[in-house]
Image (cartoon, rainbow, N blue to C red; front, top):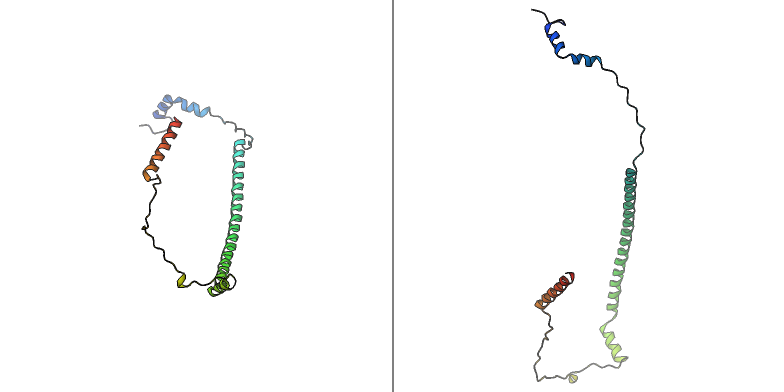
Length: 161
């Protein structure tokens, strides 16, 4: 038996069957390094998108600033309104308390010449016919409302056609 060496039959048969592999290994050569491309600037569409994005962010910030200012103004106005409401309540209370019924009666008697009525001045009126209430037919009911809506809708549909 032969030992496995470079001169053995297996190596010889392999070389006979696949001669191309040996040739490929021998014909290898070093490829030149690829040239480096110059770095191109940003594309115009990317620049436009970035500008639009920056402008949108600036506009949102501006709107938020205005919202904050208006919210502060609304708060100040609410405080002023609450103060004025409190002042109105105090002045109304003061006015009601300043008008005493005795003072009003005295003013009416002395300055206006009015007199208090007495029981002799009371007259009772008796009606011969009892009170009756008559409701006039307005012509508006729920049914007529829906009928009117249906007519209007039909007119709109006819106009569209």
